[in-house]
Image (cartoon, rainbow, N blue to C red):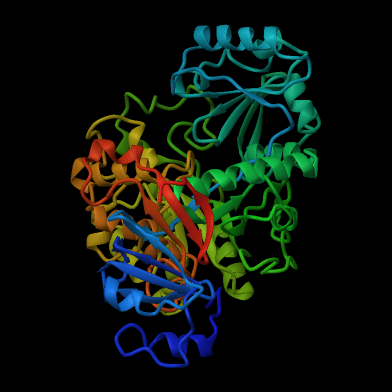
Length: 548
């Protein structure tokens, strides 16, 4: 399956370079970069000094003298001055977000605030914020497991402002009455499949939303955000990605339906490549499998719409949909055991249906899999529906894959599953506290493809440092080169795009980033401070720090 067919005529010409002499038929480069240290992520030629670009693709890559000789009278030349160059980052797991105009995020300076501190911060924000403004705050286990913090507790602070407390993972929320109304949630609403609107003993909504109820509520708020405001927010996020050196972004489109997402992105227009992945919600009667069908797969050259993502379980912080306060606090419990016991979101029959839909629609399938039970259930479903012969080339993706314990990894490899890990998650628990969960080194050693996505703040340099050090279990740390490959070459493989991007080689897209410091040699503690000096997408400058 190829998402970006390349020009066969151009490919034939490019394959001559740079190994052979330049022929008259070879294109003249529009741009040449010289005097750099280029990490290509291409095993055939891992390092180079110079690179030439023609028609948006890499024309040649090699030493300074050979590549510089290709220049024509109109060729633009950039001296890299010894800076490190890498393929553009491909963030394989991101969520472009859209919220009501003017929404305010409370900065709590803590990943796990207590209710007194949170209450005081909310009251300060309420006092200085105009009536009707949405106020949001992120919470951890302390507030989420405090059952006294509910709709009524938030209503006591304000019924003039919508208030939303979102868990760090995004899998649960606590809303006051105006915030429920903002999403169209009434007392008569029924639970969606794989989600829950929690109620008290009288059957009244408590304001707590779980799993697919969160997705449906956030989508409802995005749907009432005007196009102009939504476009402004999307443009800001895409420009931020370009400044980081991200040239491809795979959007798990939970905030926008694919038709609206592709229309808004095409109208910005997006400076980087965006893959819109369908992430439908559910209804009380089932999954919304019709969402996004019929949307143009290529609304612009930089946008592609394909693939579908579902939740197979939740995460350990909220323990999927177990009642608040009834499961062990993940900070003090054996996290491996929480992952081993994490309840699934759907019954096994729904997992089988997802697989059948993927095969019949010829659509890539992505599944959120954090716990061991959901991972084991999906492996069983794939093995009983054809096994490796049916699935090895389909590249079914396990997003996160925290519960892929050693006994599951050979089966994961045999079925051709790609694991998309999020190194930012490695920073939450503390130092060396896991023995089985969140494998990376073990997966790579077993030959399982591992790609990286941020699933949060899109700083790839922070994610690289966390993947290399893996603070939760140091033995799972990987090398710098392996981390870069996961963020570039394997992320492209994860979307069937390795023929066009992910490495810097003749014929590939000229998607690259020139870095402020060398990721392969700088002290690890300094990695997150790395910046892009120049970001190119298809040979076109989409961010320039004006330092070259």
